[in-house]
Length: 74
Image (cartoon, rainbow, N blue to C red; front, side, top):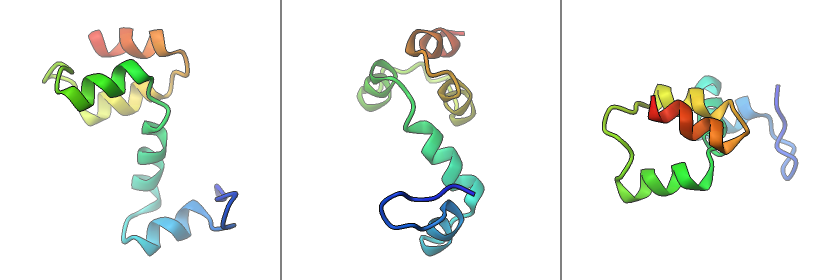
């Protein structure tokens, strides 16, 4: 169980408060680990259309941004 340092709330409790499952909340939290190049590609619409949310989630597991970029290039 993860804990929100600021409020002391668990991920599960925060997810429930917003009407989501803890699994979905963890996926969203993992996406915050994506590198700036990947985020820019998402926001500018230049990410290849074949890249899925599952691909982004998998890439976010790598903290090295160059590995993330390579994983998303295929």
